[in-house]
Structures are given as C-alpha cells and as structure tokens.
Length: 188
Image (cartoon, rainbow, N blue to C red; front, top):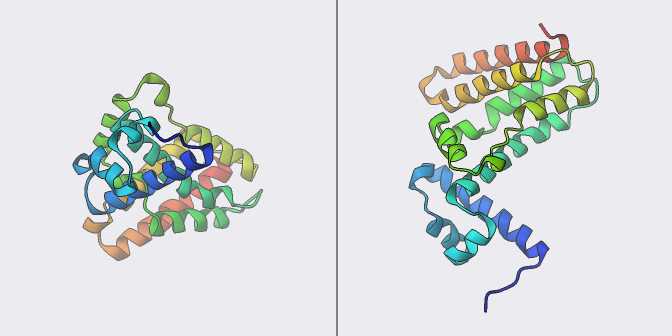
C-alpha cells in the first residue's frame, strides 16, 4: 500500500526534491539529469516523484520559480521608498553574488521546459513581480516589462561572466544596476 503523506510531509519532500535538483544542476546540465536520479537522491520511488510533479519539465519549471523567488527575497526586503543607491546596491549584490536561472538553464532550455507544460503552468510572473516591487518601494516610474527585460540582460551577463574580463564585468554590472535603479525610481 502506498504511503500517505501529510501536507507537512509533502511540503518537506517537495523542498528536498528542489534542493536535490539544484545540487545536481550545480554539477551537470538539466538535460543530463533524470527523474530517476532525483528520486533516488531524495530516497523515494520514481512513481512517488510523479505524485509531486507530473513531468520532469514541471519539476524544473518549479525549480526555476524557486530560484527566482530566492533571488527576489532581497528586493522584497528593500524599505518602502528605497533610494536609488539602496536599490542599486541590492541589485549589484544580486547580480554579482547570486546565481540566477541563467546560470543553470540556457534560454533555449527554459523555452523547451515551458513549451512542454500544460498551458496553465506557463505563467511568467516576472512582470507581476516587477509591478509588486514598484508598488512596494513607492514612487516607481519605470515600466514593469522594461524592468524585467533589464533584469534578464543582467542575468544573461552573469551567466556568461566566465568569458568576460572580471574587472570589466563587475564595472559593467555596477553601471547597469545603477542605471536600472534610476530607471525604476525615475522612469528614465
């Protein structure tokens, strides 16, 4: 008879699966990770994995969302009416010291994952988060879709830092983050 999990057990196991998936992504690309490996790492059967995620793509989509949420925590912690320099410092720290989804997935892999999901799972909440951030810090004049595009550029730059001059990379990130912070507050 299959084990019945309490909601607390399900939440704990779901987090263990995400942690295992992230640890595996640190070592190898998404396409080389199997559901069997993830389940084995967590100590569950492959069939049990499918009680939590209906496919490998659904799992990695959830993992992408978890990475985004982890990275958004510092932005959510900004004070209301944060200054341009506070926002810039937060963004600089995020893009210099924190991995983004682009460090784990190529843009093509992200598209492939999303394409294989049922339509209801394809929500992109980045623009909603940008709007939420603008409402939180107050006085935001920037357009959420532009903020998202600028953050995507920063994420892609971070994922390609290995091919860039380290000093030039850091200077570019600092300059771009300061410009983004100014855009968020001033809309220009």
